Length: 189
Image (tube, rainbow, N blue to C red; front, side):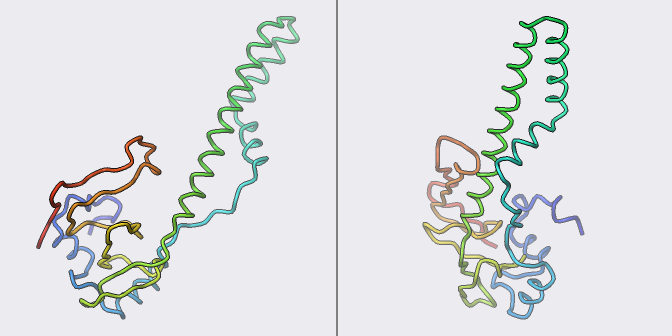
C-alpha cells in the first residue's frame, strides 16, 4: 500500500477511499475506532511551547547573513568609509527587523490556528450518529458537518450540497468564501 502522504485522496472515488482506509460509509464500529485511537493517537495539533519575543529576536541575530553584514559594517567603519558603513548597517537592521516581524507573525498565526480547536464532532459509528470529542476522531471515521460548523479534521468529501468554506485565515485571500458547487457537489457510491 502507498504511503498515506503520497496518495491524492481528493482524486480517488469515495469507494476506493473507504476501501483503502478499511472503513464503510456507515462508519467504524466502536472497537475498531478505539483500536485506531490507541494505535495512531488523538486528533490534535502538536502544541509547541510558546516562544518568547526575545528568543525570536535572538534567532534573527544568529543568522549567517546578519553576521556577514555586521562584519561588513565593521570593516567599512574601520576603513573610514562612513557612508558604506551606514548603508550596510541600514540593510542589516532592515533584514533583522523584517525577519523578526515575519517570524513573530508566523508564531502568532500558529497560536491562532490552535485556538480554532473544535471541541466536538458528529460521526457515524456503524450507521448511528454519535457526538464525540474531536480529539477522538480517527482515520476512517465518517464525519458529518452541517452548515456553520468548523470541519474538525482533514476529511474527504463524500456528499455535499451548496458547500462553501472559509479559508481566508489560512490562505490570506481577500475573498473569504470559496464555493464548491452552486446546486450540489454530490458524489454517491
